[in-house]
Image 1: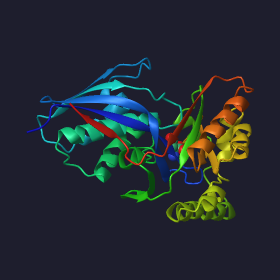
Image 2: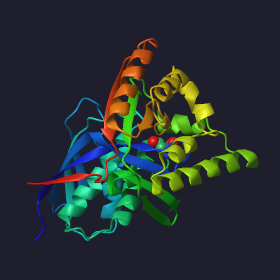
Image 3: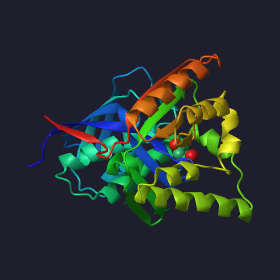
Image 4: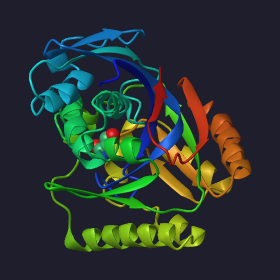
Length: 309
Ligand code: HSE
């Protein structure tokens, strides 16, 4: 017997985690998108939006549709999905808006199908949603939304995802209210990098993973360095270095661009520092003259929350 309907809360996520372009990400404890999904007996996906973002409802053009159509490819006849989507996470904000939709949809659908798919398989389906959004099947927002915590995407083909244990970390996010499309933020990146820069970058990735696993906050902090992507993408974010420097001065361990931006995030070892960082960033960003929002949350180790009706 299948359950007929379920609601999930799918969290914002931070991809890249500074030095780990396309391979590292973590989930936030809010904001969340809400999706309610019903099983139908008619093959296909129908989507209704309950927000003001005017996202397309045609399944082929919608990240939810892209993800669920991929799942339907391997399901028997006589199964379809109706989705009610209420987005809170703004598209183009850099905190995994498309991933929240795609990952939330496949987790909810899987629940209705008595959890027949593994988390790894769900990431595989949800990546088709990312492809609809940005043309690229990156998994560094999808995987942390589904697994919770910090995740390493060692490989996307074949998919290989590793949950990385970490000490408690608190996140301050600045979201300037401008839109940066992931596809555009990828187009401007250099396609080749000098070997010496690659060595610096993978030293930092290894240092960050070691720091997380050893609960070594100092090592985490000094590994949050990106010499490849940040110099290029920071030009898309007015006031970027000012914000980052004032976050560091307020006591953050480190930080950088969240995903492809424009959001910026800073990590702190306790909530008091994360709130201090937020106040410092608010006062700094007021000078820039762009409207913005801020969020403070702990890294979310649970990922998507399922609400049973
Ligand atoms: N890794 C992706 C990128 C994340 O940086 O383009 C997009 O959210």
